[in-house]
Image (cartoon, rainbow, N blue to C red):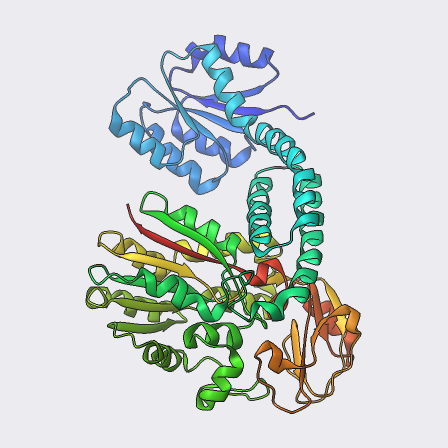
Length: 517
């Protein structure tokens, strides 16, 4: 086994001999030097597991040396050693991302504790997380087999997302594979649950119906409007629940969560249907029937979400609401910056609706651009990319601005997405919709055991372009492709993130209210 390699920099390096011998006896390999310049040279030439760095040295100080180390290697844990406990020095060191610090004179026991804490941290986290998940494994399995209500599935999905996050901290690939197996089992069972119950949910008088897309405003947004405090409703297209948990963690200290819930997207879980339904407060066939000028059919090349503001205005009028409101759609950073310049004016509104399209754009870009595929090759990488965008986005800047005002903010989305794996063959004519997770058309040929079929779309309150049109939906990680050049497209779309079908990730969506701390 390779020895742990440590660099110890101190201008009084001769006084460290007892410590060096002590660590060597413990099996560590130790290099020493007495100044910052030599430290930088050694870091360039060697692969160190940890650096002990004296803060007070002639020439380059410890803080200056640390900054230069970070330009070469960002991943080496650095323990700052100082004679001073002055707050200014500690803040500068912590701000430069030290792993820990020690105050001179340093004792051997302190050194070992720091080494154990830093070098064994990942192993200890892995062991604890693995043990905890093993204990939860059977309980999750029982939850999957016994889930019989929407609330059961919401609770189960929360638990799966929690363990997905926890096991990312673990270096045990076996546990991650087991969790993926449980997620797959859960999605198969969830699809059966949806197929059995979906049509009954559309009757909102049914006490078993979950909160669905058309009721999002009436149940979650309108009740949150306070004439004395502006409400910002932020809808992030294609934001999954696990993505929300990732970005909400970055708001800690600035905002507190006052409510966090999960609602169900309608089918298809695609922007044209789910988001138009949210803004209209109606099911898709009701929009197409009562406001045909605002509904674009699947086979039409025109934009499918160009009338959200009009649909929302019609919902307000239908409900007799008189709020002062604004609507904005943000698809790039320049549009986001322009919105941020209007924050002061927006504070005069009762309700401000902001639609951010980045996550959906990222999902489509990942399908078409090989570089993005490499950056988001799996679920953890995809979450990391969403987090990185958020931290550098105009949205995050806006939230910083709003944190100093008395506002309420509600986050939600229109649908989620899933990384598809299994191609399913479907035959259709030229007018068949092209989405990989659902198809709508009149001449569809498919294996009915592989999809959820709606032979009578009107029962699901969905519009149809022809009297004999039907809808079919992919479930779990399946995707629907035509037989023409089947092998090429099966390979091209495998492992891409798609939406429109039935899965926990696409249908169970976050809606959360936050306010400044």
